[in-house]
Amino acid sequence: MSSNGGDVVPHHRVAVIGAGFSGLGAAIRMREAGIDDFVVLERAEEVGGTWWANTYPGCQCDVASHLYSFSFMPNPDWSRGYSEQPEILEYLRRCADRGGVRPNLRLGCEVLAATWQEADQRWLIETSSGTLTADVLVAAQGGLSEPKVPDFPGLESFAGSVFHSAAWDHEVDLRGKRVAVIGTGASAIQVVPNIQPQVARLDVFQRTPPWIVPHNDRPIGRFKRFLYRVFPPAQKLARAGIYMSREPLVLGLVHRPRLLRFVERMAKRHMYSQVPDRELRRRLLPDYRIGCKRILPSNNWYPALMKDNVELVSDGVAEVRPEGIVDGAGNLHELDAIVMATGFKVMDIPIADRVRGRDGTLAEAWRDGMQAYLGTTVSGFPNLFMLVGPNTGLGHNSIVYMIESQLNYLIDGLRVIDRHRLASVEVRPETQRAFNQDLQRRLQGSVWNSGGCASWYLDAQGCNRTLWPGQTWTFRRLTRRFDPQAYRVTVSDRREANASTSSSVVSQEHISRTMPVGSSQT
View 1 (cartoon, rainbow, N blue to C red):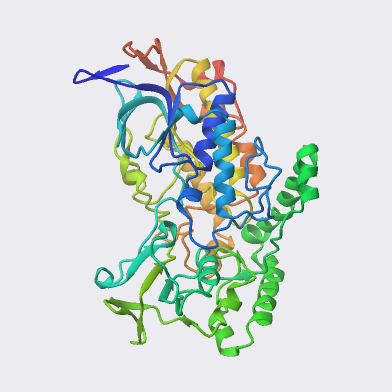
View 2: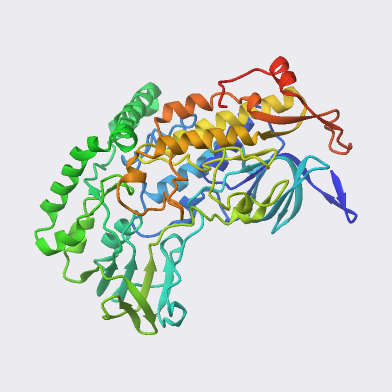
């Protein structure tokens, strides 16, 4: 414990921000590793992260259920090949219960600021529920946690209802209403077919058409679910098969974009078979290489656009008036409601302004672009571990696989810190710099960088700060063990909570002599 103005401030070994997939995974893995002194700070009223927040009609994962779940907590009872939001949320709730981490959760507790205290070698964390300190901070808020709402001229003047797909207003009854959906990304292609039968008129505002491929989602039969329950290796085999079927896509996405031509042909055939209108096909056909933006699976997107009460608007939004939207061609679309399916703040995540390291905030450190070492640690921010950090996203496989890889690194890092009585670990700036230079070099020829589109994968300078440029198993290998030689560390003589910390910088030679060395990343 520490004192501040006479009030006792709670102290924990580890504080985790967020209770979505990554935050819950960290909590469960820490519990399994025998680390009990941790707290999970979640601003929402329940676990689930993006799967708690996103409740829009048709919300569904586009990664197969058996792969979009923890390998250490399989669910044999998935009802569909691609799970819908309520089932994923229920799965995460069960994970929290089965993992025994409910007592460690602080729900309805938003992190307002987290500041590294150099003298005490710990984090001071201010939340909506009070202040606490922690030796280690785990930022597990995810990249898809803060909705992005474009600043359209006149938006505040609109007389109807306006809400983001990630904050769906269920109090608004859309039946018989004139509705606009702005955006044609992953959320929109699920929202539009689900609300189209209910509304009087639906205007879909498209900036850039997406590549759509057939969706092979189907119910999982009762026999298969029974088999997975009584014979778990069968589910492991199914999971492995899904993983292996998706992994080869990285060859085209990163190394040889021309290899994706067969996927592009499949997408075109899919569109031609569902859209007989040649003029509409012209407007729906992307002018960039497939894979440059996220490839989206859907069997009902194109049929929904063909309905008589739906209009595809390709002229953009010029302004919003009280009665509706004026498009770029000057046409007024009279509306009762506007749904923003406009994505998330990925490059300017709000938490970056709230986390302050030795020399400033994450936002300041990332002024020239987000970067981290292994997407996990950041120079200038001792004892900070990020989950789903910069360049850990994927265009072909399951992010849960990447999260589990980072969890291996986190847990081993905590073991190293405990074993060697370390007060702090901080990735060396030269290590981080070399890692990111190599990473950006490998991204240059990828379809994400060279495919001819503007996407949320790229920052304002056109630099890819989002995706991992390689096979997922190479990331798993790199994060298998914490590599202390990549870090500047300080050793504490005493780690009792009430004791003053006496620290000294440990030399590289000492690290080499006394610590187990993982694979070198420098």
